[in-house]
Amino acid sequence: MIKFNLNQNYCRRLAILITIIVTVVLSACQPYPSNYQSRIVVPTPSDASTFNYPLNQSAYNVFGYLYEGLIIENGITGELEPGLAESWTISDDGQTIVITLKEGLKWSDGEPLTADDVVFSYNEIYLNDKIPTSFKDILRIGKTGALPKVKKIDNRRIEFSTPEPFAPFIRYAGGLPILPAHALKESVSTTNSKGELNYLTKWGTDTPVKEIISNGMYRLKSYTANQRIILEKNPFYWRQDEQGNNLPYIENIAWQVIENTDNQLLNFRSGELDTIRVEPEMFPLLKREENRGQYTIYNGGPTSSSSFISFNLNQAKNPQGEPFVQPFKSRWFNNKTFRQAIAYAINREAMTNNIYRGLGAPQYSPIPVTSPFYFSPEEGLKTYNYNPEKAKELLLSAGFKYNQNGELLDSEDNRIEFNLLSSAGRKVREQMATQINQDLGKIGIKVNMQFLSFNTYVERLSLSRDWEAYLGGFLGGGIEPHGGYNIWSVNGRLHTFNQGPQPGEDKIEGWKINDWEQEIDDLYVRASQELDEAKRKEIYGQAQQIIAEELPFIYMVNPLEFDAIRNRIKGIQYTELAGGFWNLYELQISE
Image 1 (cartoon, rainbow, N blue to C red):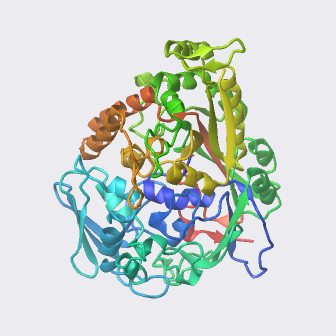
Image 2: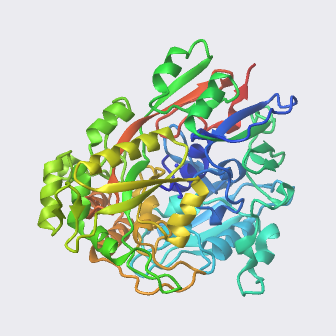
Image 3: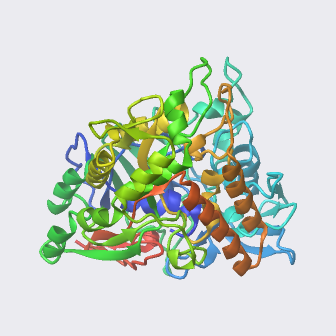
């Protein structure tokens, strides 16, 4: 999908690595100024939707360049290591963490970064019920949904505490980007004429870039809507090399909006891009040109992301009293047998071989195969191998029927037909949509494809809820499954298939939670409270079994990931865990 709605650490992956490597479309490209000598150009399929990190719902953003958390993940080992923090200590019961900041930290405007900023970021932003951010979901603890407490000890020390054990605590206590209190504090304590926090409209894409304060490797230099963002080296970034030189070495990042993969490929082959995610149809051509083009294609192994189709199970009505989904269609979508029939009708093996050139495998779980918490088909995970006859049997058993033209009807003679949304520009998604349309046509179902710009697509899914089915995906959360709790929590911001009311929204009438939805939520909570890894695996296995049975998401293919990076960028230490730019701070350019 929605790649709302990154590799091991959910927030880091979400904010850094995918942003750098992800691809898709060209729109209004203009030549770069000639003075950009020490810069790299990376493509993005969609413009930024906001410069306010906690409010962002798009995978396509520059926050990984702009912000850093207290604790980061080593791209080679996956081990946690200091970011803005100098050190941390954990109590024996694992419920209290004291983090000590590095000395002399500063914001991109030169102002000091202290414990006050950390406490502000958590208490006033991430944990604030008036601010709709999906990160709150992954910070909730236990069945009560309690949130951690964060308090200042002194200017460099902060104490995080939880009321009960919380296995992912250290990753999430330290992993979220820290935000500047001096720039944002007034906006969370004042309201507009409607009584809404001014923060909710703070730092939109219409904000002058000099007003956006950051603490990461880069800061905003310029922004041209639907074309590009230029980032410049942050002179106050904390990292230095052994000789005392300020890092990063690369002076500028050009984040170029290119709205489809064909145009990205043209730009990469002509030398205008420094990296590209290698889509399956690109691989043979780019591999042949690897030496001549002076780049290297790296194999990232099985992706930790997911691709799927999902039906809108929301039975509620909007504030105007109109149902989000027509009642007769809602009955189809909420029928588990209907969803299972759809799963049997889609030929994932053909999709893997034809679209992904055999570089992948069918996908059946939201947890990546590289995670120790993955529950495999060999262990009992339900799978749906292509079987259109089985699909038809299931539909007939559920009360559907066929007319003389082979069209599928429900018991009231309604033709089974629905709209399938997807984001425009990605050839792989378009090919997947074409095959899904053909496969479902074979069992008498009519699919109407609707391709939208990415930001419009996200708005339809998560704000208006005006959709019937969508083809999309989520970026990977790495080996820690709790990073996906904002998807599986019944109140989660990314619980797209049956999204309930969110903070600040108008009331919606008639929202219902299925028992199996609540059970998945409960299992994720139990797993987060269990410190024994073997028991956590068992609990997550139960959740995966329910997901495979109920199919809120019908998963498609788990492909291998390939990235092409110019050889002029020195210091690449590519890993399956974190890709090629996890150590961007020490990369250099050699023309």
